[in-house]
Image 1 (cartoon, helix red, strand yellow):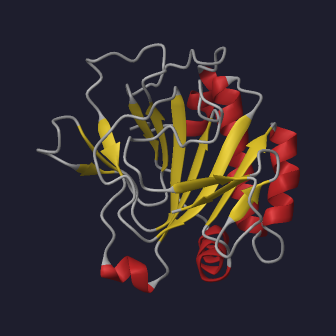
Image 2: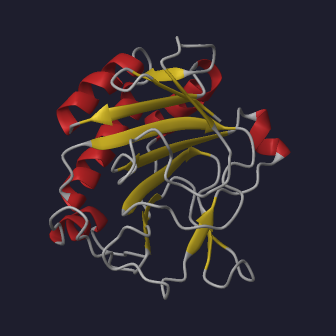
Amino acid sequence: MIASCPTRRILAFRKSPLAVTLPSGDLTTLPLGLHAEVRDAAYRYLATRPAVIVLRGTRDELGVKLADALQGTFDALREDIMSLVSLYADMTGHSVMRVRLERIVTDSCRKFHVDHLALRLLRSYVGPGVQWTRDDGAHIEDTPPGAVVFLAGTAHPDWSDQCTVRHRSPPMTAAQLQVGGRLLLTIDETALGHDGLIDACCEEDHGTVDRGLPPQDGYAPDDDAGLHVRH
């Protein structure tokens, strides 16, 4: 875990795309606390907004799209997401990124796995963080709620079979369901090597993807790709 000035240290090793070296190996956690305004906006989102928003674009394009998707009382949440978009872009050098904000109410990604991409940023705004293990689940660790988590995947240039960290979403509890579930932010490089319409996560079938369909209740479209995703 990074102890001193996490943002400055993260930005200090920005390299070209897919050449990022994490300071703590294949999982790095930035223990950045959530401001009360961000936390309040996240709870409001859970109560009133679609199950998932998926957006793709450059940093500037994502700023416009998020301003449209998170209008009203969600300014603090939108600003926090954009700060993490900037962090991810500065860290990786990627010009185009995917932002996914989803309400989780099931045991999504319940198996320990490695993502099929280079680098993924996760932040749980409501609910627990990420569970991870180095020994196939014999000992399970939890990242702190609200922490910013970077996970290297199989497309990372430094990844090999000796990279032992596997991660999963924590099992859903009744208490979490009472507050509307878990609100998770994901930022990545739009499913590297694919057409961008799959999650590049584990091989578990825990979601649906529909192309060219009109928006439905609980769905949020990516207006660039005609993508509608729901967990």
